[in-house]
Amino acid sequence: MTREAEITRTTTETDIKLKLNLDGSGTADIKTGIGFFDHMLNLFTKHGLFDLVLKAKGDLDVDAHHTVEDAGIVLGQAFNKALGDKKSIRRYGTSFVPMDESLAMVSVDFGGRPFLVFDVPLKEQKLGNMDSELIEEFFRAVSYNAQMNIHIKVPYGSNNHHMVEAVFKAFGRAVDQASELDERIKGVMSTKGVL
Image (cartoon, rainbow, N blue to C red; front, side, top):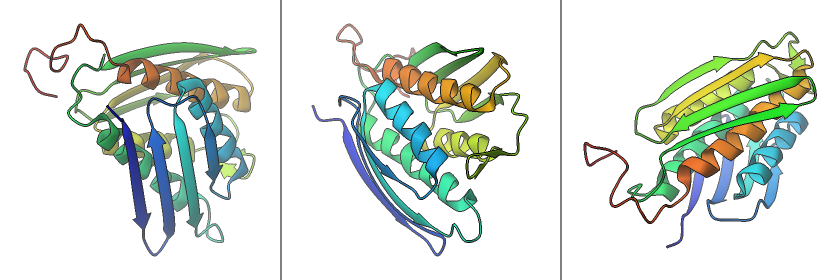
């Protein structure tokens, strides 16, 4: 079974093409025009062992908001499509990742109920050429379009780059765990019989 998705989204603000393989090896080809964001998505891909191609052209002359949010929308849609009926997936995934003085915890559920909890004490307005508040916007867009719960917490840390890097690595690892197939699971992992 191939668990892949290709999504294209074109608006007056962005033009995005994405290809995702859930059962990849961590290969990334990402170009959004936002260096810090590209770096984080590369980390997510590597640590989740996905293959991800993401090409985005956005109205960066305005700011990075539309590009980051729309990338989250498209990535969420790709997860939803690649997972299909969600039969035999573990559904839940949790990962703790340290990055020097910072620790990130990410827990996800592909149960069909979108919700984001984002508890990351970012102190700087900018991360490279990107507004730090866009990190939360990205994860919110992923959550709602993948129909998944995402809980993100950084209980301690002082370096903003380290905190966010740990979050993206943990997110990749948690999603990898939640999307993993388990032959013991017949149908979906729910007593309701549907996700």
